[in-house]
Image (cartoon, rainbow, N blue to C red; front, side, top):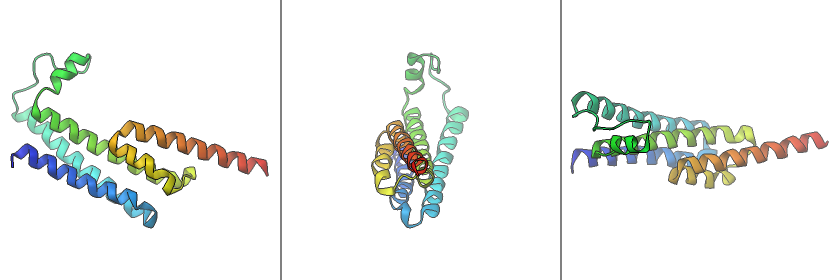
Length: 151
């Protein structure tokens, strides 16, 4: 197996353990959030290593690469190593955001069963899962506020 494929497989395996922990969070929420955050931190470490290695040992940035235009970002992500780094970036951040959602849900009054679609959506399309959670949390907070004010 090529080194990049091995790193890809390792990073995916690590975050899958974190995602599994979040799905069963009501059983031991604090431990599940910690496990997910540990997995996110490990994958973030892989990301930092890849970026540092690429900057120190790589051929440098492709011509025109940058963050100020779509063309520049396309050039930035034009190598296999950059695509791997980008993927690992998604893995770490999506898992961390989902761990925050699971940690915040009890404060917002969102039951875990209601959270499951947001967790799964965060796994598949990070920002969409975050948006769903923010809408759910706002709805449950509003409902709780109305219920406490109605008495």
